Length: 330
Image (cartoon, rainbow, N blue to C red; front, top):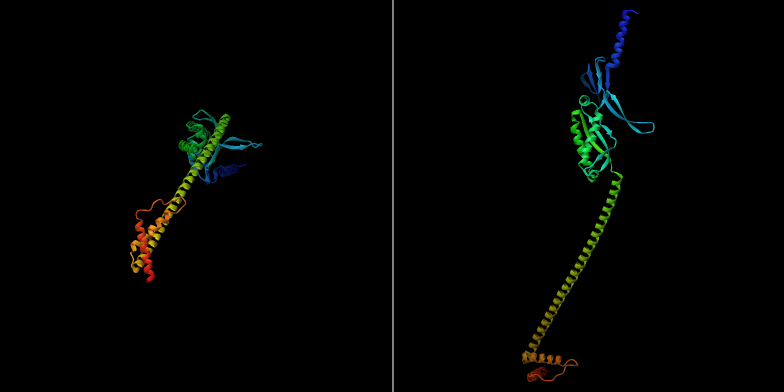
């Protein structure tokens, strides 16, 4: 083999190696950190890039993956990768024991949603990013829950999530990581606490039922009393209206009777005057006769004396007789 052939083979081998190692295709939502001779050189975005295979090498990063075995059991596997995924990543941490402010040990299962925004800082600012995120989340969760009682922990998941997200996002900013959400999947108190909580919940429900029943009875009595009061008011109002109407009727009747009597007196007066008599004596005689009639009415009424004005009555009767006499002659 001649020297020229050897040179050609070396050139061909170099071209093939350069084509295989030097031509890098980065997928969408991925990035690569390239080091030249052990020093940071540049960050490759999605697309086609050319690097020098001998001088330029991609920097790898440790990453955790959730795998499943043949039995379907999930386990975590740590691998080194040189392509960094820029999409949002979900870390489901194992359950951990946390002590509340009232010294109750509970188990909390948390899920972390984060996204790498700066690949260079994610590699050079932290040695093991997934492990650091997990440890930071665990310690922060202990601190946040340690400030709350058990009842507040169970009823304030959203508040805990917001506090965790704010603290973690601030702490991981220098690592080039954005923490989007932190969710508490499950909060498991001890078994004896569960039993006590169930008893407390049952007692609270019984108390609420008793209070609601008492409130219902109270409201029913109030409504019943209001109904009786309203009925009495309506009855009194009806009686008042009836008395008013009765009084108005009697007043109108008396007015009608008075008007009729006045008209009768007018007619009698006119007739007596036309007959040449005295109307006053005639009316007085009529009233005396009506009074005597009322005095002798009934079984128990007895006339024991004649009034002093009997002579006047007889005179009035005589006047009536003369009046009728005049009427006959007329």
